[in-house]
Image (tube, rainbow over the protein chains, first blue to last red):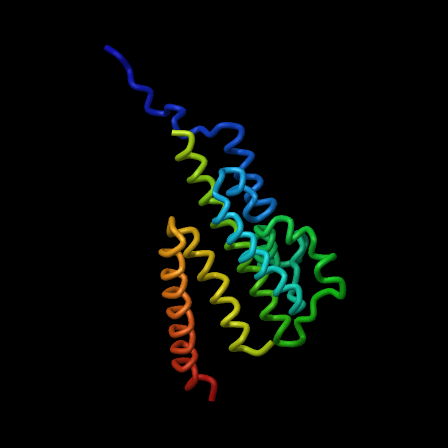
Length: 134
Length: 56
């Protein structure tokens, strides 16, 4: 009697697939570019980058890992989704956050949305990498 | 930047990204992005009006 391996490695990705997923997080759109989805890559880069740059232009809050409370930590988790745009925060927002003005509050929301949107794009890259592998 | 321009910018960028992720061709992406954008704006304004009595 033959046994079927239920946990087959059909879901396992190639190293290139893992690299594409990591690249998709690090630079929005780069993962899709590596997976030869050029149009989607350009749109993702422009949309995530546009949201992040607009957020910095409005002087939104950039949450650090040691924010002090759970809300700041969750903000950090969301914002870090935009990868390079998060790590370049000091370059893109040299004067720091200004949430005393309402534009700064909007900017914080823009930065959060940019990160969350890029997490969605990473999931899309993962799906494409899986489909390409099978 | 005021409330409404910020909302339009945010809705526009998110709509285009969602359309790019959900549709395979440029034509379908354009029509879907337009639909998402209109829905974003209409629903946002509707929610704003629904919240209006509570702001008094």
